[in-house]
Image (cartoon, rainbow, N blue to C red; front, side, top):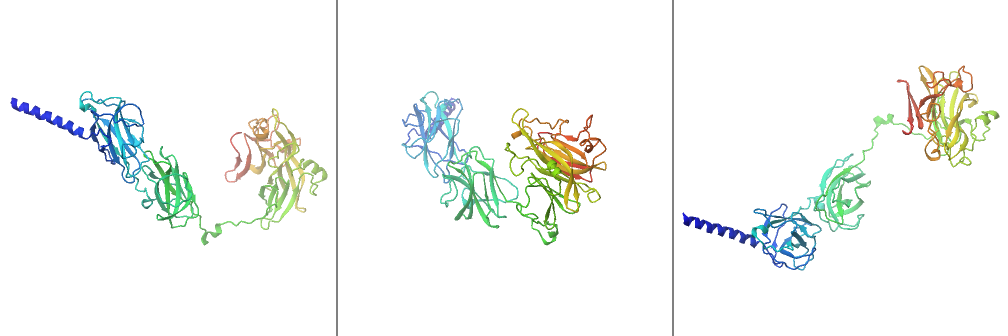
Length: 578
């Protein structure tokens, strides 16, 4: 029994000694005879030791005495980056820590090579990028300013492995991944990690530098397609897309872009190639992205069965035929009634032939026959409408803008209502200052014999006006069976541009600025030239009658009335006054 015990002890000691000997065999203290490590796609550890390592005296990227061991590795074909990891073997404790143990790489197969990395502590991955495929490199592992001789030899053991991410399957043009174009973006997940640079491509629109690229292709279903990449990883920092025609052996550059590229001269049914690259540096990690190919929605093909649904476009008035046309209304007489904003004229136009006749001219200095001399004096625009107002680098927004026709135009009430900026009052940039004009709403009577608008009556000619936000839209619409004239009065552009000091009164019911006003189509029995045009049931009537029907309007530029729902709609520009 005692003999057996002694033999067991001897065998155990021999086993331990043999293990240490084997570990020591994987160490190379000499740079000239390094241990070979083979990079793999997964970590295959090589166990080694720094025990009794000496300093080779080879300089590197960090100072101090380095007690080192040496390795060599060769990059696989098409591999430009590797990751190197080392860790201590903690059984029984370890003398190696991240504070005293480091890795460093060198750029050649011999001991005179140059360092290509920082001194990277144990436990931190040493990532090498920009390597050449099928090329040998040196790796040094060392303790820094600490001779690895103390204590148990096993406390200086460690594992080391080298891994790499193989190039994507679409690293070269022949391996291009097929994408399908659609009218909306349907992303395909992609990566540019470990891609290499394609050489021998014809020059085109690409930017200067090395392009580490991956490839895609698609079949054109439209003459126009757009390629878009999105959500790039944090290391995919200098993206470029290049679109090619032809085939992998004979490519023609068509277009380039950073995150999207569009070409509008593609041949339907042909295959096109997409090169996505990171310019200037290889990407070893965090290089994912999304890619999609889109094309416009195909145009509707109008077949014979649908021809009756297509409108016919006819030019009724050629270029220059109207001076800033503003309002157009289809009249009960079968004609188009048109206002000229800057021309201060109203026309009737034949909707078939385009022939037009002037029914009203209230331009500056007009003496047209439809109005008397006194009426021209009262109702003509009072400033030169062919140029900016004297002393004011402004133009009253709108001019002759609104027009509406009485619903009984053909039944004894041939009334036409117009709204326009009539005169310039003042301009000031001081407190409460702005550009002040005066607006008018006037009813005219149509004379069917002369074809003119005559007998003007002012419904309201004291309306505030401005260089901005006059609105002036009008419409005739019923309320409880009675028709009224609704007039949009803008907020005068208060608070902006030339009216920045003008108070905003859109919410002040005592002011007509920023409101919808309601007037009678015909004068009632009330006394006074203005009160007779104001409905007695207007919502803001009090001790004094008010034309206000709705408050908080910025710049209404459209009216529409729904006869089924009895609903009046208005289109106001922006939220600032409502």
